Image (tube, rainbow, N blue to C red):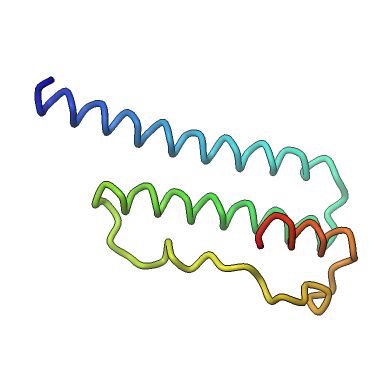
Length: 99
């Protein structure tokens, strides 16, 4: 396999991974779009968007197209999610999803 073909395959794979990340985020956001715009739902939307940006930065970093360290900054929110004013169900969701 030529170097040019290898680069093209890597480029296509990278684009596909970014598309998958955006589609995953869109699916999550579409699910919450139907629901009432509560603080908890807005927070869930924010997390899905932040997660997608984190994943895209990481994908681009892997192919030397993003040099920032921002992709390393995705961390679980404070251990005590209830302090953020979330109801028990949302706090449980956040803990399960992000920890």
